[in-house]
Image (cartoon, rainbow, N blue to C red; front, side, top):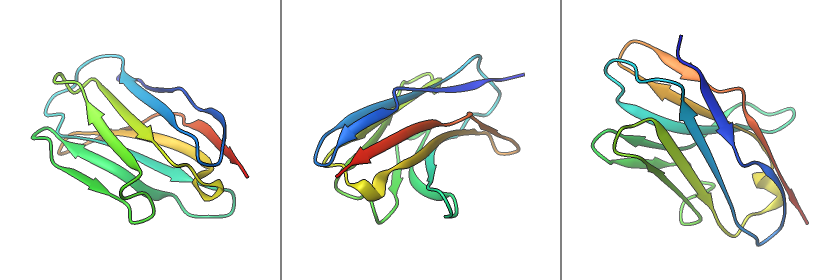
Length: 115
């Protein structure tokens, strides 16, 4: 059973930066996309960023130009570099690792941005 674990959440002031990471416990077949999603209290989970095996990236409108997703070549770890953070960026950030047939989610890491 693949386990996905996020690291690096915490409290940061508005305008600051934070990097979070996510690692899979083992490889799984046909890994083709890694992604970050977030959920604030009372809101639906939303896309933050995704990156494919080929390196193509996609960002949610709220974070474009401020966040950068990257990954290791082995597709076992993904990073989310967050800059110019805003209070609205606060929430639980979840990592998702996907093959064509299955998604693996982490347990989430809390990011809190103070104003």
